[in-house]
Length: 120
Image (cartoon, rainbow, N blue to C red; front, side, top):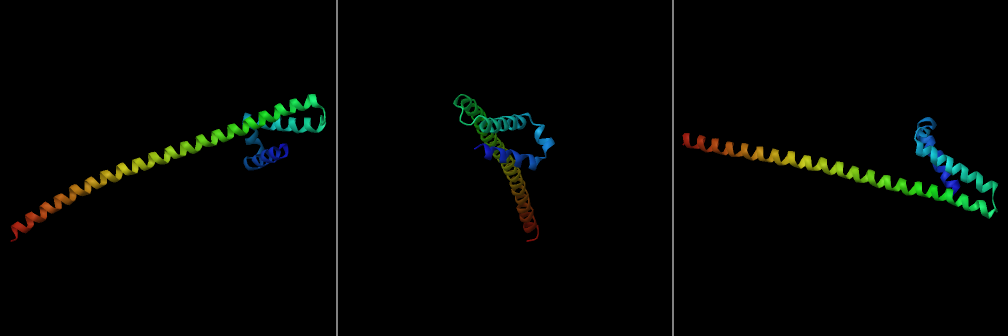
């Protein structure tokens, strides 16, 4: 799993640029935890006492994954709310336009009746 986490971090750094990516403290935290876990797994492989610490670092990393999923869900909900608000505004605008057109249509009907009466 650590290899996948390292790949993910490398891809993120590549996508955003190292300077911008490292400016986010949670990204830096991820990098430190992942690198520390990777190094500790290599150095202390087979040492049961230290492996529990490595396991704790993996838990930190997995907690970050849960947090990313949570933030993504919130972002999708916000996007949905924004789109829904835009649709509601559009519906209101269309309803107002419909009312205006109905009123204009009624005036034109009345004018047509007056015209027909005066020219008959």
